Structure formats: C-alpha cells, structure tokens
Amino acid sequence: MAPSNGVYKFVIIFLLCCSLVVFLLTQNFIDYDVRTFNISVPYPKVWSQWVEPIFENYTVISQNVSHITRLTPKEPGYVFVPKNDKAADVMEARKSLRNIPEAPYIFGRTNSGPQNFNKTCAPFSTLDRINFNNIYWQTESTANITFYLLNAYLDTREMNPDAPEVRIVLMADVNPSLQETCENSYCQIWFDLKHRPQIVPVRECRPLWQDAWGRNSRYVGRLVSCPLGQSESHLDGVIPTSVSLVQNICDSATNNLHVHYELPESGEEVEPKDGDGDRLRFGVCVKGLDFLEEGKKPARMVEWIELLGIFGAEKIFIYEFSIHPNVKKVLDYYVKKGNVEVFPVTLPGTLPNEKTLRHMYISDKKHLTEKRKNEVITYNDCLYRNMYRFDFLALLDTDEILVPTEDANWQDLFNRPEVAEAMKENSRSTYCFRQLHFFADLTVPDVTSNCHMLEHSYRDINFTRPGVAVKCFHKTDRTQTLHNHFPFSCLGKCKTFNFDPANQARMQHYRSLSRFDNLVNRPECEGMQYEECLNYFTSIDKTLWRFKDELVPKVEGVMKEIGLM
Image 1 (spheres, rainbow, N blue to C red):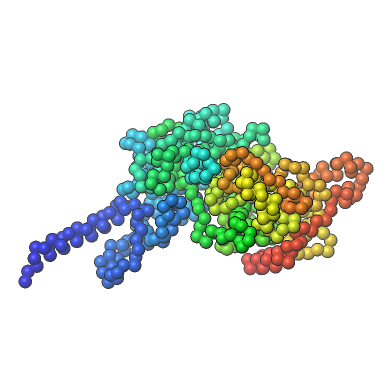
Image 2 (image 1 turned 180 degrees about the vertical axis):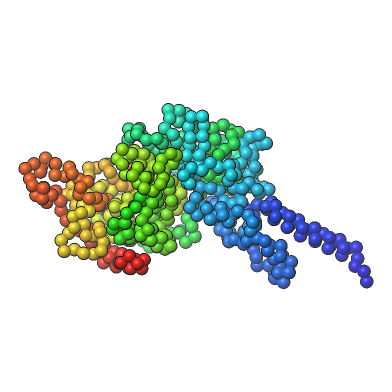
C-alpha cells in the first residue's frame, strides 16, 4: 500500500523543521541566555539517532548565569556554542579581563540582542570596536580628554536614593574641563534581550581624589553614575548587561563594559550564630602588589593570610602588578583553596607598565600622588564588586593587621555590647582602628617561630594620634567612595565608630625602623644615645602571641605543602 498524502506532508514538515533548527544554530540566531537545554530527554534513542548529529559541530559548555541577575535568577544549564565560534576564546580571556561582556553577546550576532538605537544612532560596540589600553582598561576620547574605564557595576542598594543605577570607575586626563565634560556625557545601557539601549545622561561624576592631597599626576579617578530610572528600571527583571560611556547621545562608543552585579555565590550565605545574632561577613581588599624580589615575602604572606583567616576574613581580594614566582606560588595555593581572589592590574594611559620600569616609577617618591590615585581606583573597584557579598570590607597592606586585643576574632569584637549598639542603630558607616607601629627589624631575643609578626614584638610606646593613618572596616551598604584610610563619601552621612586601641582593637603596622628616623629626634631624646632613646620609646607587646598555637602550625604546614620550607 502506498503512503498516504498525510504521511508525505508529515515527513516534509519534519524535515523543514530540522532544517530550520540547523539554520538558526549555524547563523547564531538563537540567543545566548535562552540557549539553555536539558540533555536528559525521555527518548534517548531518538536523541542519539536524530538530535545528536545536529549538534556534532557544537561544544557543550556548562554555564551558570545565576549571578547575572538578582531579580530573575536562572538555573545552571548547558549552552551550545559553535566550535568555530570565538566564544570559547572570549570566555578564556574573561578569566583575567573581567570588564568585557560575555560571548556571543559581545559579537553582536544574536537575533534578539542589542543592535542600535536606530540606524544612525548609538550602534552597539562589538569586541572589534573597543579601544583597549594596557590590557585592562577601555578608552573613550573627546576633543580634550581621554577616559580610561576599568569596570562598571549595578548599584541597587537601599541606601542609594538614586538606585537602581549603573556606576563606572575610571581615570581621566587631568584637564580643567574634565568635570564639565564628564558630567555632560551619556551612558548607553544595553540589555541582553533588547535591541535598543537605554540612553541616560550622567547624573554625577564624583572625584575620587582631593587636590589638597596632591596635584602632581597625569590622571585622576572618577565614579560616574547613570540612573536607570523607574520607568525602565529593570525592564521586567532583566539586569543591564553592558554600558558604554559617550559624550553625545548617538556616538559610536569605543568602550563596552560588562556590568558587574555579583551576589553571594552558592554556599556563601551565612547562617546566624547561635545566641550571637547575625553573623557578619568580612572581606579584605589589597592594592596592586609590586613584589619583584622574594626576600621573606612568601612566608610573611602565608602568615598574614592565615592570621586574617583566624580573625574572620572570608576572602581576600588582591590586585597584582608583578610578583616574585614564589609569592605567586603562595597566592595560587590560596586561590585554589578559595581564600583569595587575584585581579591583574596595570597603570592607565602612558604610564610605564614594563614591570621593572613600573616598579621604579611607583617606588619613586616624586610619583607618590600618582601611585595613591591608582590605589584608590582598585579600592573602589573592590567595593563595588563585593558590595552585596560582604557586610564589611577592610583596605589593608600586607604589613598591616587588625588585631582584637581581648576577643578571639572580629565577630566577637563586633558582638561587644558597645559595638553591637552602634551596629543596631545602623548610623555608622565606618569602624576604625588606631595605628600602632611595630618595628620589623627589631626581633625579640630567643624567640623563633617562623612567623615574622610574632618574632617582631617591639613597638612604639605611643599610638599614632587619633584620625591619622587609621585603617577601617567599611559598611558596604553605606559606603559610596573609598580612600586608603577612610570613606571619601557615603550614602547618607559618614559617621565613624573608633575602637578603643587599648581595650578593644588596634591596627598593627610592621615597618622598618629606618622609616622612623624622627624617633630619635624627639625632644625627650635630647642628650641620649641612640640605644638609650630606642629603649625609652619602645616596648615589647605580645598581644598576637595569644594566637601562636593556632598560627604557627598553619604557617609551617602551608610552607611545607607548597615546597618553600
């Protein structure tokens, strides 16, 4: 019996559907965020015989995109990426270059994705249109000024009266017209499933430096803010994917920054401690490391990281210029353990970036202002990357440690009634520690512990005066911009809680005695010999020795495990 016309029609329709699927895949018309499949199908035989051959030219990549959106999180799935596509290369590049959008979005090939405002206005900037500078910066130039853009972030914090808005951390040429040019610019804000950008004027171009701190530099930092507005604030729950900063509404941008919106990762949520109220989350940010020589830095780095862990640091965010291979061994060990994240960084613009020349440049006191301005950029980047993941962030150098004088850790310190009361009022933006200098070249006699800070227990008898060179915990829900030692601006009024350095906590700073030539020039030392004066102004302080039995085995164990002991 010959097949009926109905059978012929079914076969033809089936073949046409299969052809359409193959065509869409090869043309990249299926959007990235919706190309999510569950490979587990009820008909494995049909799948293997008919469906798998269609995908034989595609790579299956497990892709968890739940961190992209706060309002409409997506489940992990499988994304089919054509093998001849460059998406895998972009995914590899984004491991260190985290300011470019994901692929294939950045190629502008998706049928439902970003294109332009109209045919003559605001075209989407694909990867080949971006102007990169010194690897990690993107640039946008006007007639008089060049902006060097580092990263962009979505700020939805309750304390921010202009939320939701996109923030951009950047540096720019020092130019009298900088502020006016910056504030008269626009943000082209792009969404994954929307052809047209939302174009909004820059609300604010906030300085990240005061001229009173130093003018001798080529570049200056800014925090650019672009409110999304309530009418299109989240576009039914979709989070902005990228943003371009331009001077005129319809400009073709030479930058396209991924918008960071990093929520707590799976397993990071913290349960309250029994009887102690909510458990706080502490993170630490570290400016660009520039350790070309080894010295004793690997062992000191291990001691410092382990001690921070004992005190309650859940993660340490380290920016890296150049480091000695053995220091890298240490950081790689802790990155693998999940205690540390490392972000490579460079200087912007025409500043030197060959590692030896850069080291000479930032070590020269003539360029101290330029160095400090770049440190401020990394600190603010660290804040905005982590404002949803941590309650507090501390900005520390690797020779500084925040030490509770009586409590076992930072959580217990914040559980003290007087501190808890300030926390309950939610009026403080910052919790600060007075500085106490310990001398890194005066060792305690007959003490060996393989721990630099334990062995160097000689300190100045005087604390640094209040408010000078303090280090602080900054509340992430209230801080708007950061300086090395204090918040530059807050959401609401900046208000500080100062720990009692004798009975609560202090910042111990380990520096060579040669940095304190003025020690023996104090009036009290007049007529004294150097050693006599030194004894007069120093004392032994073993506050850290309370943690010796826990710290020393940890340090020695890690050093042996990574082959440096």
